[in-house]
Image (tube, rainbow, N blue to C red):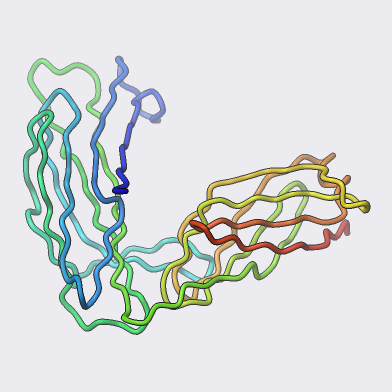
Length: 243
């Protein structure tokens, strides 16, 4: 099944608010691009679901993560794409051709293709125009792939459980869902919380935080952590220190 990304932005959630509620919508297929020696280019289809014309600008950046797992973006010429600036009429589609120029790596190389709507102002416009901006991951895959990760550690500080996930493979790991299940001394469940995770790039450790209440922290002796990535699930139980 082809997955789609639909982005909806409401002006009411922005710091700068328009006088009227504005909804911006764009559909991108696929939501991730994978390139390898057998597939050196791919197409992205952009659909304008707004009632007005959109001006789109595209920019490619190298994507890495620092030792704390925070995303970093740097200029790159490795990713080639066309067109770079174009218009999409209401209800119509446009196609971006994406390719890679460089050596094929033994460890996955990661990029983002930022698709940005350029605001169009008209003489009779009132309020703010909300522009769409989204980043499509582009993965340059090695021939031999090893997708693996471990739950390296879990720490409880006040009412926050910090889960450290380390990518031990040579391609990205997507922690789609992270669950923390608290248990007392008799292994009875005392709480259950779930958060949405994010990408952990090859060789990187990233900490995900889960908030719990003071009562939950005091009532749990240990916590079972479950990390879901597609059909794969990592599980590990940790004792909680009350120091």
